Image (cartoon, rainbow, N blue to C red; front, side, top):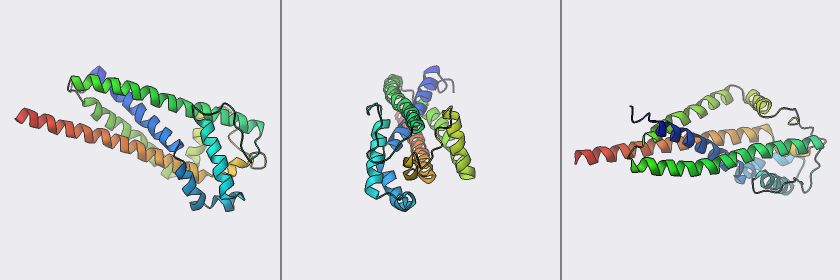
Amino acid sequence: MKKLLSPLNIILALVLVLFIISAAVVITLNFKPLNYIDIDFLDIPAYSGLSREVIVENYDVLIRYNSVFGPDTLHFPSLAMSESGRIHFEEVKVVFNFFEITFFVTALLSAVGIFLQSRRRNRGYLLLAGILTVAIPAVLAVLIALNWQQVFVLFHKIVFNNDYWIFDPRTDPVIMILPDAFFMHCALMIIALVILGSALCLILYGIRRKKKGKHYAA
C-alpha cells in the first residue's frame, strides 16, 4: 500500500486523470461527424430553416475558430452575429484552448512520469488513475440522467460570468444549428471517452500485475 500511494504515483495519477479528461474533451470538440450525424438525427435543417450545407459550413468555421491553432476572429460565412454573441464565442475559445493546452502539457508530463515509474517497475499510478477517473463520469452521468437541462444551465453559470450564452435566434441564428440535444450528445461522448480511459488504465494495471506475478513464480 505504501508503494501504491507513493508521492510520485499520486502525482502521476492526478496528471493522468487530467490528461484523460482533457483528451476526451478535445477529441469530442473536434469530432465533426457527431454534428453531421445530429444534423439528420435531430432534423436540424427543419428546426433551423437552414440547409444542411449551410449548417455544416458554419459549424466547421466555428470548430476551426475554437482551436488553439485557429484564427483570432470569428466570421460566420452566412450567419449574422451580435456583439454579445461575439464576446461569448471569444470566452468559449478561451475554455476550449484551456483544455487543449492542458491536453498537450499533461501528455508530456504523463510520458515522463510513466517512463520514470516504468524503470522502477511501479505501476500503481494506473490503478489510482483508473479509480479516480471513473468516479467523475459516474457522477456526471447521474446528474445528466436526472436533469440535463439543469446541468446545462449550471455549467454555463459556473464557467461564464455573464448571460451572453443565452442567445436570441433573431440576432444569433447560430444557436438554431446547435440545439441542447447536440450538447447533451457531446457530454455523453466525453463521459464515454473518460470511462474508456479509466478502463484502459485498469486493464493495463491488471496485465502488468499478471506479468509481474508470473515473473516471480518463475
